[in-house]
Structures are given as C-alpha cells and as structure tokens.
Image 1 (cartoon, rainbow, N blue to C red):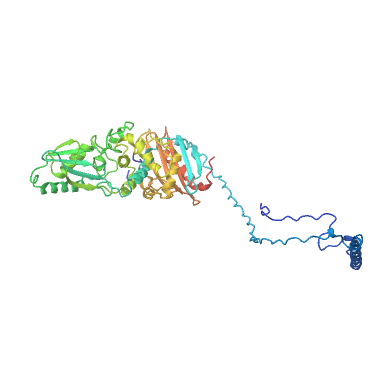
Image 2: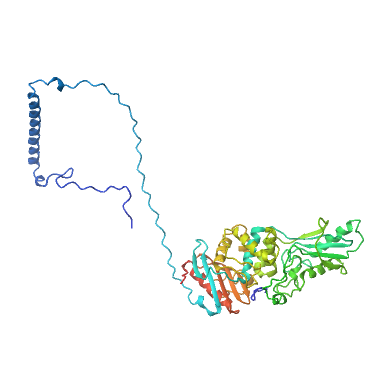
Length: 505
C-alpha cells in the first residue's frame, strides 16, 4: 500500500627475564668482605698472604711425600704407556641463535558501557505488538532486541527485499521489453508483454523513463506498411500475450479494496501505466482487467480502434514488427522505494523468479527472493515471501534479518548502492518527506516505510548523533492506527540520540 503520508501520496615481567639468585649464607657476594674485616684492610691483607704461604708449603710437602714413598723412582707400571694419537673430528661451531623477543599481548579495548535507554519509547501503546532490532553497522553487533528473530509481516518494507533481489539477479542495467510480432492470421498482430508494467500509454506517465506505447505503435505500423504482403491492409486483430506471468493476478490474501482505492493493480505480464486510470497520478483507480486495458490503449495508438482484442500466445518464430524497452532497473528501484509503488515492486520480484527459472507466479517468489538474497551472504531460512510489495499479512521477515540486509546496503555491496541512494530520507524525500520535521534525526533516517491495515513498519539506516551508523527495523503490529507512525519516529529518534551507547534494557 502506498504510504498515507506520501507527499506524492597491569603489566607482568616479560617472558625470559632473569630473576636474581640469592647466594648461600656462608658466601659473600663478589666484591664484598666479611663483615668483621671491612674496617681493617691492612689486617685482611696480611692474613691473606700468610694463608697463601701455608697453602703452597702444604702442597709441596704433599708432593714430596708421595715421591719419597716410592724409593725415589717410580715403578715401571706407574709410567703411562704411550697411546695412539687421536685425530679429533672438527665440529662446526653452531651459529648462536638469538632468543626470541617476547611478543606483548594486545590488550582488548574495553567494551563500551551502554547506558542510553529508550525505555518508555519502546513501550508506547501506540506501537501495538512491537518487534524491533538495532545493529551497529560497522561492528555488526546487535544492540537492541525486541523479539528480533520473530518473522512477521513487513508491509511495504518488503519492497527493499524485492529491490535487492532484482539488483542481484537482473542487475541495474536490465531493461524489460514489450514487443509486437505478426500473428498467425491475416490482419493480425500480437502485443507481447515482457512484464513491464510501466509502459506509458500516452508516451509519458508517472514512471521515469518509461517506454512509449505510441512509439511501439508507430514502429509496428511502419513495419506493416513496408511489407508488400500487408501494405495497405488494415490491422483487424490484436492478440494480447501476457504469458510471461501466470497464475492468480490478485494475491488471494490481499484485500481487493487496494485495487479500487488505487494503491495496486493486478499483477500481469502486460499492462500500461501500472493500470492507472490517471497515468501520472500516484494513487489512481485501477481496472479489473489490466491486460484488456493495455490492449485498448494499443489499438488507439495504432488507429485500429475496431480491431478485435483477444488474449493468447504469440506464434513461435513470428517476425518482429517493433519493440520498446523500459527504463533500467537502476531507475525503477528508487522509484518503487520513494513512492512505495506496489505494482512496480511486484513486477521486479516476479521478473527475478522468471530470470532464475523457478516459476512465474506468486508461489515462485518464496523460492526466488530468498535465493537472490542469499547471494549477499545472508541466512534466508527464516523468510516467508508471499508477494513482492508487502501487501500480504502472510509474509514473514524477522527484524534481525532486515538489520543484516541494511548493513549490506549501507556498505553498497554488489549493486546495493542503487538501493541505498533510492531510499526515502526523513523530513526530506519520498514517503518520509512529511515525517521527522521537528526531530533532530531529520535528514539522518534513511529508511523504507510500510503500512497495511494490520501494521506500520519502518526499517533502514540511522546516522546517529555520535557518528555511529545504525541499521534498524521496527514493526508496530495488530491493533494500531495512524498514530503508530509518530511512536515509531520517536523511538527511532531515540536510537539516533543514543548511537553506540544504546542500551538493550
């Protein structure tokens, strides 16, 4: 659903250090004297000399005594026999190896003390059943958790997932064709939709860079007239081929009033102006048959208002008479986000499924979108994807997952810079232009809004007052009204003011 406030709608001894070893008590340390002699140096010197003479004399006496006991000559067996000379094997002197220097251990930085509380703001009754998550985008740390792992309906925040999936699978330069080929019968042409819902019935519409239906009609007529087999003959039959998409054209869980209130069209592979009655209006009544409406607009552009219109499939190998291309995905993604265009988001999600070859109906999205998002290195196992726009209550996305995805978006991984630049900004643009006007967070909340009958949501990026970049998601669900938006904005302003000091309590 388009948003209701849409302006357009302690250090240790180092390893290896030597400890002093104490000398035994009976030994003096080198360079010291016995305590009783320290004041008599001369006496100490004389005593030392006497002691030396006594020792030398005793040694000589001992030696003479030993020789004399042998009768003056040593016995023959006392003479050592000569021994063979031994040649020593030289050994290399090992190169001294320096002892390794002790490596100082890094001291962990102290954990931040988080005392900034948003208590009260997170229990505002206007939030209904509130789920939320806040993450430090630089460190990845989850700072705030309120049932953050619980999958829940996202409302239009789902468009962020569809856009990220399209950028991963289709790429920013991808354009969607609408083609005309010859029919299988005389006077017949086939208008083949490639899934582009932005095709402009009058050349221009609300979608920037939209392909022109009048241009396609002119190409078709020129090719028709240039062929001798058809020149001068009228086009009497137009087959409408919307087979690129299949299955239900209105998701069964959607409230049909969204079509009549002008917030969404049927999901078809062929349509013009997002099936708006007023091509340049964001919110405009839609028809009950978008394919037929596109056929009528083409007949008018051809000047063949009497031509018969039928749905069918183009003949294999039919000659092409004309083709136009949509604006690139890099243009469509910001448009879908800023205006919260449901039909455009459904187109992007469905084209992802077609490109991946997993199907072309609503059911295929539950495989296609998680598969695409997994390419960013995200765990998508908790996702339930029912549609591409977020209109269904049956979608399931945990707030925690959104904070992880927005870290990727903030870091501009892959092609996600396109999405980052296309998000509404609080008090500045898109569906957030009318919000955060009096808040210090104005200009610092870059996020996608969401609103359905059973909930209001907001998820994105906060450039906090302390310079920290946070990613967040807030769901206000169940019995909530329009005042939930003010409660969400107050809570997110609290996140902005707390920054990395945000307390989880």
